[in-house]
Length: 184
Image 1 (cartoon, one colour):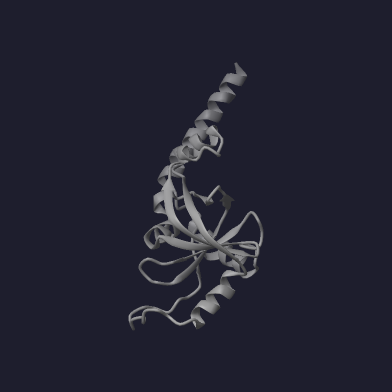
Image 2: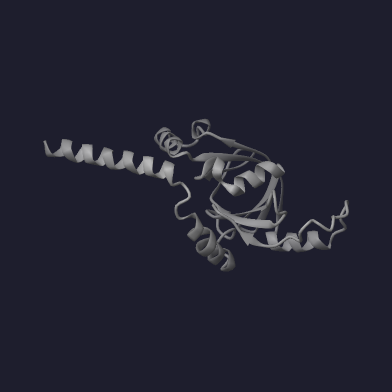
């Protein structure tokens, strides 16, 4: 009798956690955005290891250059990245709006395009039970196609891009690019 009660309590806790998460998805994101991500970016943790990457994207409303820490997983033609906030993720919206981004993993910068936000069920490489849990939590996966790669860092490539001639003149209303960490 005792294992049954324990099992019911465990299932009840899991269900209540999922329901709570679905209603409060942005909980903790301010702390991560304002404290954790800037600290890790400043200290070079993101983008320097195989497990954490730095995704560079442009704000769709502000035009500001943003860096977001992500966990990229290599795929056949590019990368896939988990998006815990799904369609509510600002960085995911930015990448979808722009249609491209750059990702630094280790000492390589990857040029990525063809972004697609997909349901966990569309990612067969993830175990079925995880796909199910991620789907219930509202997670999504980003599929990004790699069309180029070069050694270096995002900062070095950004500095050389600023010195390169610009094909189209920028309007006075376009804000200058700034480095801002963004939610994950």
